[in-house]
Length: 230
Image (cartoon, rainbow, N blue to C red):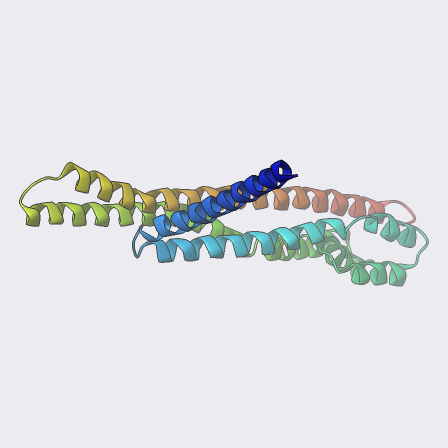
């Protein structure tokens, strides 16, 4: 019985030691990042800005993609049956980019096909601009964050050599330790830049796929209206 109690006590001590080590490691990581200097404040802001924009745009684009499912088939069946009002109502209720495009086209049924194509094209451009809103900011963050990190490192190196000059001698330990701390700014800036770069291109790929889908549906819609007896 005492042996089992001893094993339980040993396991408890080991678990507490592991938790303390993890907490200390996390604390050390935060402290190390803070040693990067004042430049870490704008770099942290850029990270927060990039994350907010990425997730907001990701959710918006995903929602726009999902809400289009089955829309074209409903519009097609209503148009083929001559129920234009019902088709417009379906587009309006979908509250999607494709729905708003088709609604513009349906509102101009009876006019020349070129007018309908122009209305759909203009509506499509407007919807694409809405989907791409703020995505370019991620591209700006991807370019600025690494440069800010380098600026922080350069200022740190200047400060190190100034301290060496004032001390009148070179202390390898001081120089290497100072460089190690100041390189944190460069590493942080590069990390934020890489994340923003990946997010920028990932969102653009999603938008391009949605644009291709919208163009395909728009062509199918124009072909439907151009059919004899439509």
